[in-house]
Image (tube, rainbow, N blue to C red; front, side):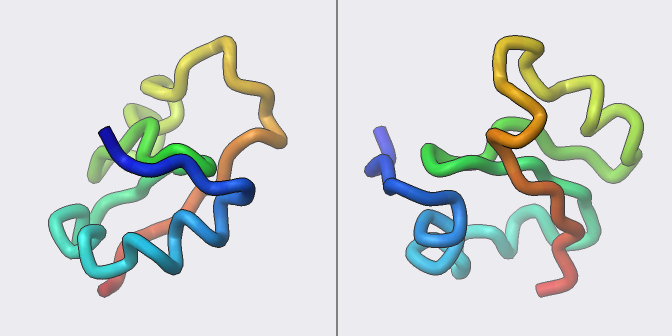
Length: 64
């Protein structure tokens, strides 16, 4: 299991290299890790668990 960080941006900085596998996809992540990803934005958004508050995650597009 991945380490949990206090903030989403801290998780991102610590795991940026690992995100290469999501190149060309939209991702949603929080302080615990990636919670949804897909090349199709709507599918990625639909994959975000409903119990996570809208301000509880970050949306990004991986161009790494």
